[in-house]
Length: 551
Image 1 (cartoon, rainbow, N blue to C red):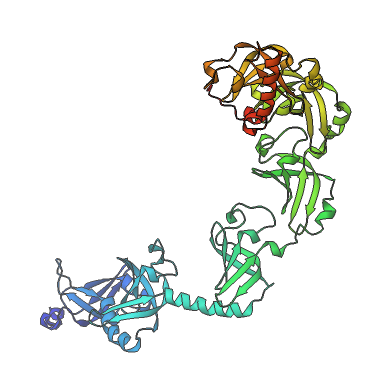
Image 2: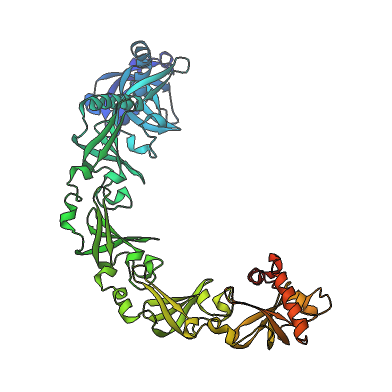
């Protein structure tokens, strides 16, 4: 009863005020205090920075939030009492821009709550130079912070840790920028990895280590050599003080493998390597770390036409090759596979002399000729103009097809260009060499219509020679369209009225077939006169302008 009578009247204790309290008990998680009421208040130990600084019987100030809870106990807070007392002190002594020390006590929407004597708000964007994904990792940590805004009405303080970090790094960057020189070997920590290179922290100064300066050898991605957080040794390659940029290199800290390259890989030597990359024009071969050679597709086979390197090689293959060229300044080595074998074209002149008769299979047809396989890897070509003495052939496919076995004559050899020229028509004598023994002016001939043009009809005669009947020589009557009189395959009888050995042309006349000698002579003269009109007499031009429609 004496204690109760001695207790302060309840009316003297007002919620929302700071009152004195005596610590009566300190447990692991709770501090029990007596504020002079019938019951004691309990304060979470977390509100005390260090519970060891307090003892039983010690008088402290607490903030009375409520006189009684449901159990009749007062609700008090040590932290809020400290904040209430500290607010005025902080506002007076720590204006915006001041540096304060505090402990991160919890997380709130958009950031963290930091105890700097009072609760201050640390936005997530101001925690570090890059906004962290997980704010929980910072709870319980103590740091220095910069006050960036104070709202007196709301009693709100906004702080930043990021600004202090950036200012510190700026100072370090300036100090590092003025202390390093091109050629210095430095140690730094890998800060970030991109597709094109690595950003390295040189004690506050960021440098870029480009992928091309990481290794003398081939790498596809920087992550093949380094990882974030790893400490590496680099050389300073370039400094741009105005932009604050530093270019770094790792490979420059090691010997250049291209030094004395010509002594290690002399031209003509055989080398071993691994296929590391295939491109449309060839294959790159790693001879040693940092040294690659290129085998061009043209250097893969003496005889086979290699269109793409993957027809012969694949990445990872271990192969042998011959060194055929070195460009040290451009760091290029030319390699060849075919040089490991004898060049079969060196024996071509011996095996296939000009004039020799050969037999081979047509391997391929083009618009200008046919390729004939003479032996494995050795082809000869029959040009379209060497197929026939007498017929004008526009495309080889008119008379030849792939897979045909043909006879031909070797007419030319060029081992340097790996070319052999063949001819079919050379198998026989040129009938035009003795055309006068086959046809004479005025002789009567029989033939078959093989082509019709708007100017006339081509008649196949003996020995495969073609003659032409001009539209004016078809009939005594005016002929508008030859196809009205003649058709392909029609057999006709005609007179030879013109032989031009130089131009390899024979002019025929159907209407003169029944002429007597006098009438025939007159017709021949008329035909010769017609020759002055180039449009009508140039049979070669007429032939070239064959109308594929039978007009």
